[in-house]
Image (cartoon, rainbow, N blue to C red):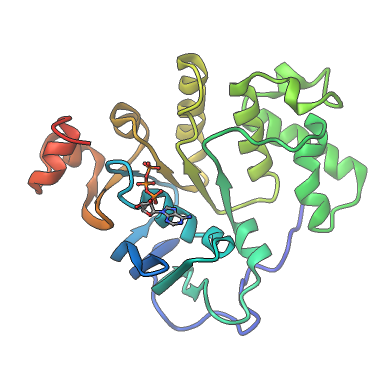
Length: 269
Ligand SMILES: Nc1ncnc2c1ncn2[C@@H]1O[C@H](COP(=O)(O)OP(=O)(O)OP(=O)(O)O)[C@@H](O)[C@H]1O
């Protein structure tokens, strides 16, 4: 399957850095009107890794996450300063193709949000939008995405039934399959399991561990155990500031910062 041009910019890649990372925020501040919700954050994400964003409610995790594929563009009061680099290209540069950007950086939301369409159409929609019309090719993409999200056996006999008839956990895996269908490089996940039961949560965590072989994954979670289980790196946010970013095992066993220690020990938040 061949989808879209790799460059997000009609001007081509700039010479600016991303530090070798797949994705990097540099001195990133995000505002809602005058309120600074994210404050001068430097944070980079390596390929084939999972980074967990943690911190108390309102500290800016989701705002930061949404900025990484320009989802904040849809919020009228939101503005930003600083840069976000994707393979050396500034994703906010004039001329950036936001559709291609979001193809390369997919998003999975907290609440499963399948389209009001069949299971098959949920996955075929993106590739078709990006120009794939061949039925056999679409069939292969649908099967491959459902297999990768461990949904194929559960759905292969009802591909043309409504996606809304699936359980919540299955719907969330379908949303991940839908994100995979356009061959992203990076997946952003905003509390992807918080609306699910423990069994479905375990399946999503298992899936994240498998997907990280191929993708850079950034996940917002309130669940400290989940962060410890699934992530390689953890970034702790507090009141819009990035307080500490390190290997997950260090953050959870020997954090440098007292605020991080207090938060992961449950003393606040
Ligand atoms: N659309 C918006 N308009 C105005 N302010 C917003 C908007 N979204 C978030 N904020 C504010 O920005 C700050 C950061 O919110 P954000 O949702 O990013 O935090 P969070 O850490 O993800 O919180 P939670 O864990 O509760 O989801 C909060 O003060 C919040 O009220």
